[in-house]
Structures are given as C-alpha cells and as structure tokens.
Length: 489
Image (cartoon, rainbow, N blue to C red; front, side, top):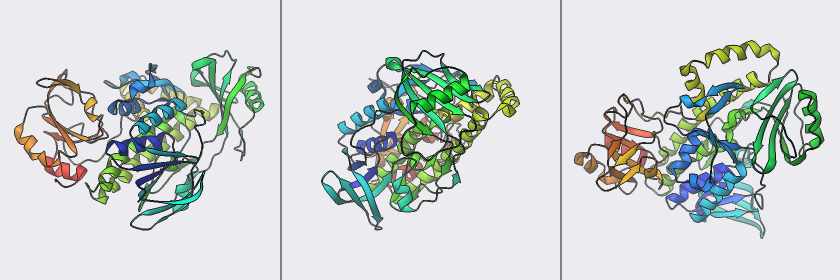
C-alpha cells in the first residue's frame, strides 16, 4: 500500500479530512489537480458550528483576529443568531483562501503527503484495496490505498467514475460573484432585493469589495471561461441603477442554483465528502461549512477502521448521519432561494416570515438550521437532552489543572469526562484508553436548569458529539464505547 487513505482534492473538505486522519497517525496522500492554490475565495467566513469545530482542534489562533457577528439572515430576512446561547458567534471576514492556507499549514505540520499537480485519471475498487491511476509532473503512475475519498467538488470525477447516483434539479438561473477593487458601495451584507433581481455587497480586507448579483430572468450558461467584468457591471446597472464600471475585478465567477444530493455517501472503498456529495445554492454560506463538518464526522471513523480498532460497519454511520444533514441543507437553501431570488409575488411570504422571526423560538430554529448547531445524531436511546448533540463548551477544574471540554478534543480522540470522581466508571472504561482519554474534573459555571446540571459523566466522540451520558442513556458505558470505538483491547 502507498497509503491507508488517498484523498482527491485539497480544498477545505480534503484538507480537514487529512488533518483528522493524521491526528491518529494514519498515512494519507492528498492528490490535487491544481499546481498551486488559486487564491480565490468562493466561501467567506465560518458558521458558529465550524468555529466550534476549529476550536476543538486548536485551529482558531491560526486565523488571527477574527471578526464575528450575531447578525444573520434566512433568505434575506434578518435573523438574530444571538439567541443561540453559549455558542460561538459566526466569523464574517475570513476568505476561503485564508481557510485553505491555514488548513494546509496544519496538515503539513502533521506530516500529510500533499501532492499538487497530480490528477486522478481512473481508479478501481478491488475489494481489498483501491488502485488509482494518477497523472503527475513525472508522468502517469499507479497508487494503492485501503480507501479513496473524493473531496473534489461539485463536478467530482470520483463521484462520476464510481457511478454514484446524484439526483436533483438542474440550475434555472445564473449568478455572478466578483471581488472588485476601487468601489465605494453601501454594504448590503444580507442582500437587497430589487424588482429585477438581488445584490449583496460586503467589504473585504485590502480595499476589496465582494459583490454577488442575481439578475432575474438570466438563464444559466455553459461557460468555458469566467464572465467578463463588463457583464457584471452591466447587470449591476440594470438591477440597481448604480455604475460600477470603473471598478477593477480581482476575480469573477458564476454559479447557479442546481441542487443535488448523492443517494449514498459510500460505495465500498470509495467515499464522498463535501461538494462531491451535495451541491446547492450557497445561501447563508453553508457549503464550505457543511463540507468541513462532513470530514470531521468521517475522519475519526475512517481512522479507527484502517487502524483495525473498529469494524468496517462504523463507516455505515457516516452515511446514516451525514446524508440527512445534506438533505436538510438542500431543503433550507432551496427555501432561501425562493424567498430571496423570486419576484414581488413572494413579498407577502417575506413579510410573514419577518414577523415570525420576532419570536425567539422561530429565530432559534432558523439560526440553528443555518449555523449547523441543531445537528443531532442517533447515538442511542435515552432521556438526556444533549444525547447526539454537540457538546457545549464546559469549564472543568481538576485537582491540579483547569481545562475545557473543547480543549480536551484537540488530539482528535474520544473523551470520557467523569464529573463526579467515579472510580467504578473509570475502571469500566479502562479497556479503551488507547482510543479514549478519561478525565476526572468538576464542572465550573454550570447554571441551574442547564442541560448539564446534574450530569455525572459524558462520553464525547472525537467530533464533539455526545455519545453517552450518566444519567440519561439507555445503553451502559461499555456498550456505547464498543459501538463508537470498537472492542476493548
């Protein structure tokens, strides 16, 4: 074998997956068709859940001073994300190029074999391995790995070659995205609708302005090159009446509202993550964030299987957990597209939704959906309200240390947090200490009535989701440990 896992694509999903695998020592080769990063930034910022994910791995300092905000929207209707108690605010100012640079630096430090200028030509799942034919700077060669993961975007070669079914709807419109210098426009961070379309305006570092334009009635085109700036400026003038022709485009791209989701996230030894598995209108900036979270869900499971710590059936939970997330993502982005990109006929619906979001429960529901904080996995029966949900950050005090539940996840291992110094509990988990850290510490700052009030212990998966609690789980601790981390040693 040349590596345990070959990842195709060095975007955010591929890099995040490589890092998750390398945290456990799994040999990884990342193959990227492009010889160098483009510097383009289709994604901008992180959702609150991605902020948490990066915090779980100690990555946030790599991004420097991050501007955050609780201001958000659903289909152009303002929503207060501050109703999500105890959560990170969303990052608003980090371009995707910076995200990719930070993740590449991280995975390189972890020893990832990243090969740029290497294009996958074909591959074959041979039941016991995947054989991959690659064209690189030195010619065509073959690599073998236990698993192949396609993180190669919406036009995924891996998805097509492996025969994944990708049902959905084709694009019905075309939108422009452009980063432009030399403009002084009124910010329209959540967008503004006009009779003939919708525009968004956001300031970026270095005097650059991010523009998004949807001119109603513009059909999608099959392009072999990016749109010209004159197309953007002319469309902007028709929609807003503003003249931006004096601007200097840094880069321009076009996209549509095609909406598709694979019917399965894994076929044998070939797995998909990120845009290779789901494409949609980029409403609310959810695409990159969902892709990163796909990789965080998959990484520790794939690592456990290739290291022989868990049976291959653990990989089945990747599809079981992330396919419903992808389905819900498509639902909410389609709904936002209808609200935001339709004409005056939907204004009454916008007005009604604008009234509804004044209720905290409605804002909490929509903010949880867009941020990813609502995600809940079926980890087993029980009455504890946090079972299957992500772990809120909890301050912990031990005999001679202070830490947080977030910091305990930096290593990418499972964590059993014993909140009541229970020696019996620790003995029952002793057979999994090669995969699960056991930490005895008292909680600090848990408010009365909090979901963690009265909780004696929690078992965290490496992705930060709660797999077991005491009290509150129907399964006992060894059963949950074996389900998520394989048999005891």
